[in-house]
Length: 306
Image 1 (cartoon, rainbow, N blue to C red):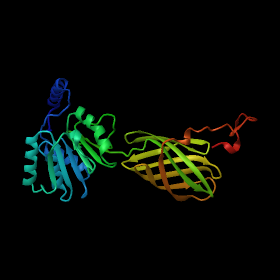
Image 2 (tube, rainbow, N blue to C red):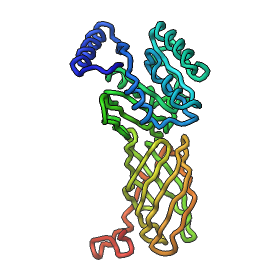
Image 3 (cartoon, rainbow, N blue to C red):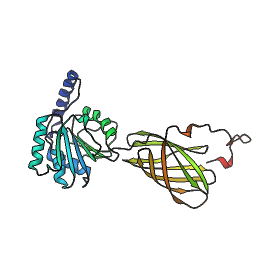
Image 4 (tube, rainbow, N blue to C red):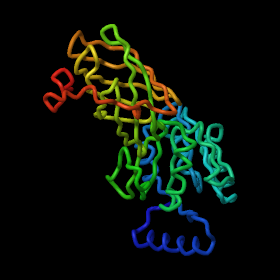
């Protein structure tokens, strides 16, 4: 889409909404992007030699062709529902000398295979980009960079924004799916302890709680960027006292593999290997009991206070 005045954009959106009501399908009109906005988008993407840039609704092909010009090693392709624009784009790629690395296909954006994509770009009307959001989250690998122009992706908060010019450019990093139960064991001071964690996720925003023995605590400083997950846990571990954990690992499907820095109240700090597996049912919900309660003082006993 080209650089348009705000009233013109609003008018186009209104027309698209009217057509949608009649046709029961969202789509975007083609308006050519400006070279300046495309370069800003691809600069924010931080292009790499091994990137595969995929443009959903590729129009005249400017974004993948520019990407291939900016980096002579990456590959790119685009999907476009208008066959005339697909033909024009492939012709432009040949004229630019990048046809060996850039191709365009006559395809609906909803049907695009994003498994190899490392960068996904969109400059479509906001409703259509929102409709494509679950497609991207389902098919693109964790760590894939997603860039949109002019409009954001709703409740999915951007990881970076270029607002130095018009239009705004938004960058998103596809997060790994970590919601649900996880379990692992750690050996501290000669004892093995089972950790059960429950994670809640809203895109890259994650919260969680943990259980070790009969104690429970809230995870701190949880960060998820692509497949990289990090968080901290301060919890009393039997035999080690109040123990600080700093976990960091990489999510790989139903496993997380990494290391944890452990600083127990007793003993020396150390770094351990850490491997968590996804669980169908978490023992976090198992009964806790009342044995930690001291009825003679009507409070937790001194040895039980975290």
